[in-house]
Length: 114
Image (tube, rainbow, N blue to C red; front, side, top):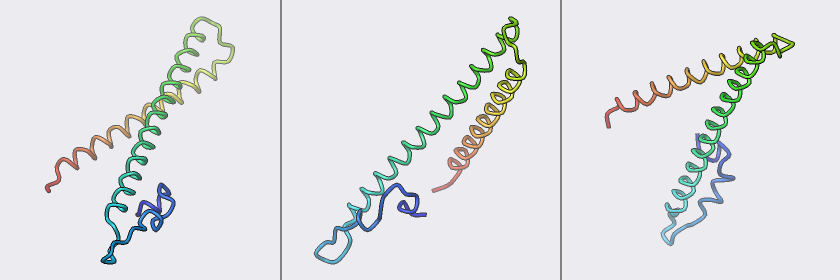
């Protein structure tokens, strides 16, 4: 899949417009556009990962707060605690599974021979 297909770069022809006197496309324009797209793509991935971790922490803190309210008797609806605890549990399981898959992928990459 090309970088333009992902939607990071508006259009490949506008990024690669430099033509040298010999008729070849200037490689520096194309490589700089690809590098910029790669950097913004990795930043977007990092932001998505950070927001997911923040969301997980929010679910866990909500579950903890409702657990304290349930124990002290301040919680009128026990179902809300049960739902919050289940959401936090599932989110933690998904996060753990993704982490394990990322570690497996990294291990496979490290086993590859050049």
